[in-house]
Image (cartoon, rainbow, N blue to C red):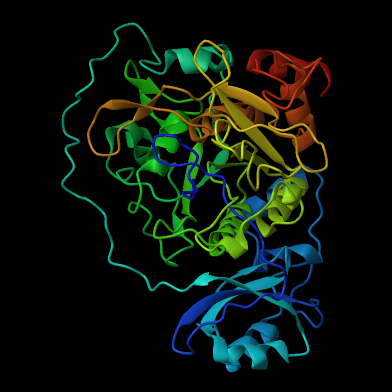
Length: 468
């Protein structure tokens, strides 16, 4: 399927391939297009490693210091002089990439020769049609005043009890770890209703819902476009006892819109990179992305199985760098298990991405869950978690609903990863993820269907305690 949101109730998140670098889109000169422009270097940059506050927040700097990760030139934004040169050549800069030293630009194809001739430009490739910002689609008349799902008296997690118990997350909560002090970024296609739903009351009341960011429209309005992100967020952040409590109800969250629901093009990967770097600049500890790329509306962009190396796509490259910077990058594996494609998507192929497949609540593998391995024969997905017929918050009314997809298995795990991060704030990314893998049900014999199996987060906690 072409939709890039990993929930079988909506569409599958697997889509997309790179055209060869330098490929251009032939268009009428009046048409504006998105392009990715990579620069040759960061020479003569005004930024220094001694003044990281120019491009990183205090929290981001503190995270690197705590984990012993130095700020390097890789963290520097692109040279402002290069961006000025791009704009003087006729382009408009949509956003930039620090880590990949690039800019996403838009304009008419007639500007390309001038941009290509700039001495600091390395490569340019077409990313998709430019779409002007549309009218906000936020729905304010949703009925959120009355609970329409019967509370389950005596069951703290309500209708979400089975999905957290399956990974022993409730026991880790009882030990006092519910994600407090951990910043979780959620990248998706929209978060309709999050700004008013009672399921997220505690986030708003405690100021644990940070300023959102829309990388598609370049504003802070993300409570629109799609309810998918709302459902994803609810598996972690919902906090209505006896109705639905998520896997990290005490964490702090930032919602980042990176998917353009109006079409499928590689520009969404560019938005994804920008969203991930924004999360890093805030100092996010964990990032969940229930998104993926394998096929696009323009077939020249489609990926093949050989492209799943974890380093071809800009999204996969960014995921690898984010992990090196100390962020726990959790991604859905994809919903193509029953399709001819079958495989995981991008950026789930990245070594730095913790890729999650889906099971039923009884532990059986969901038929739609994408399988590995990667093109270079690495085990993917990393683990599996409940993702078939799991409980979610409805985006339009105060009630629970049901959904299926690796879209939901991923955040269920991401919330518990946030709880582990709370317990072990100084553990490295690899130490945390290795503890989860080694404590999962199939750790001795991982395979390309379930990876290392179903996690047990108390066992992972104990493994980390033994090896601080």
